[in-house]
Image (cartoon, rainbow, N blue to C red; front, side, top):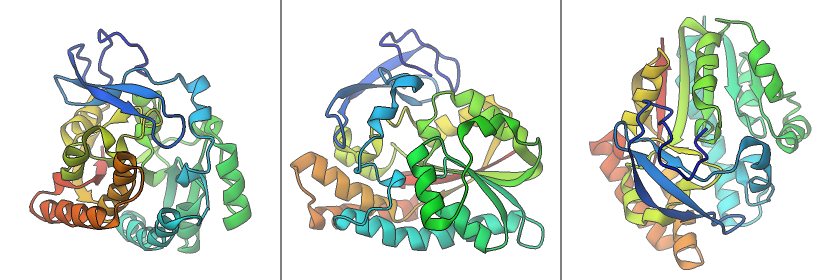
Length: 299
């Protein structure tokens, strides 16, 4: 993981040590601390340069404001998130069902949060398991969905070439040991299996519009900030290939609401809707302008 303030650090995606400063970004949601973003001149991966080490980052997740580790419906943004999640669970399920045998198979959800996707896939007869490092999120998964998520220590003990599908829904950008994690995912994947990685896309229209206030930078929890070329390079460096890229349509509206809040102190709903529409129109013309992307990855 890149945690040094020095820009002599090697890029984890391509190995280059040529960087440029992008800008400093505030942790708007929890601590209000400032963190520095730099971009690799070779592959365009962006990195939170002065991010905390794995051993000390947990306090940046310890807030009711961190929605993926919560089942809260307090406030309109949380309520919208929980309602939209019902739709996206069905969409994600449809995306992965073609990679099992007879529409079912073995699935690993890495970074499961509160376990909603694992529970959904289990109800659809998949042999689905999840890994989640946060104890509070695992507890919610058990209480709300009766799903027993594994902790991070189980990751390296799982059987090789076992999974038809591995999913990471807005998770890879949080992982300190980037290449080591991708290598483990590759080890666990069946030869014809697929990995689906959802991640924010800083080359999107809304990222360009909001700049340092773009909510999907979410420093320091987001250690890495991917462009499509950076994701392709990371996968290639780990003997994997991006086979397809798909947009996440709802993200542009959700991210715009948070971004206007960070920019002006409260949510500007009209501006958020308009910006979400503009990003969606751009995405129809070029999928790589979507606020978030789903990468379909295989051997």
